[in-house]
Image 1 (cartoon, rainbow, N blue to C red):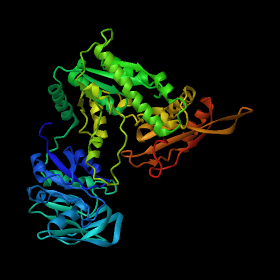
Image 2 (image 1 turned 60 degrees about the vertical axis):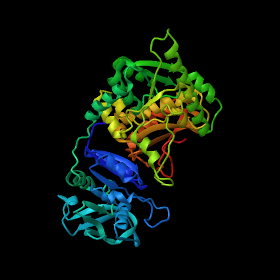
Image 3 (image 1 turned 90 degrees about the vertical axis):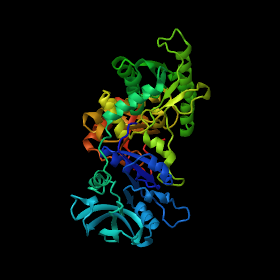
Image 4 (image 1 turned 180 degrees about the vertical axis):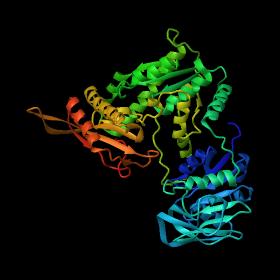
Length: 524
């Protein structure tokens, strides 16, 4: 990557660390999350413009509290401490932190008592979001307080000579409405960073880097039709053209017309070499009689590995194949930055949610392919922007997340061709009505779930005894937490009426009003 302005964020276990990184990138400044104990020399070698210390759930005095390398305060770089980060700064530089008599959580009002470069143009009062139990009770030498809240006289502190700043609240969350402006002041005015991180520059630099790394070798990519693998495919194709081959596996658990759409967009429109493998029967045979959700996931994951491996072998060695290529040297994956930094998370950090990834991980060792991850520096919103700039259609770039095991985790109970037909038809109605009402692109996910619950109904003058469909629509920022969406009643009525009247096998429709937590987004 070219020498962009960079801000380093040290992660002390905050649930908001990724949000800080995204806010900095929204300023078009490259941000990089590092483990809390990264040596100062390693940080200096990256030549950052500044350092941000994230929040975290610990107390600075706790036995296993995460601490940074003390030398970071001697690098001559601006430092912004947020919540636990400001407490650490005070603790390391000679101040005092004590347990607050009253925990300060939620909305608060910040009142500034002195001028400060962080707050240029933001006025003397500001709505902020607090989340802390400990607080500063004595400032380090050379610091002064410039803002207070009801529960903290040291809500904002500064030492302008060394460009050290501390906030007891969270500027990165949406509940601090002008927090982004505050962060802009830090990265632009205090750090002197340039807004040179754009998706246009990323595309050009990444393509150049891929060409240099790959040379004349050939690359293979498992294409799922989801946002990440689709953008990775388009980016790699721009970089190396016909040296890329994509393998699209139809596991029989896809949405309506998914296989046709992927082949149309990538094979016909982008002219990407695409090997289509219809392994529906193979997957459904393995899933016959299986009802346990974890067993379903394992069967689907394992079978995919074998199907993909067979496809690669046939491409590499079968001269009769329509796609003739020498042996592949590189395996490309749509790994994103959040996947990468999960390995950075502090052990025991409650925000460190390790999820099962469903790209082509865990492939047999005998494939001996080198890994290529062109999107590993990007967040999801950046990936979508790259996709749009590469000319991918909106229905792919802005599509909702879809689970790796597909419809298998949206059918409770056994997977059969008939139950897949029923769910596909119901799900197609949900998606089409959401799009028609201009709701589809406003929410995180909207889909149907088929329940193994039969109930009595009346259709015409006849009694029915058929399955129940649940409709799930949630809003979320990153999938880690979610809330159910309050859809208009007339839209819910249309969805329900169409499913019950048009889908043979369903006679009742219910709406899932469970948030995450305590529920999960998917039902299995």
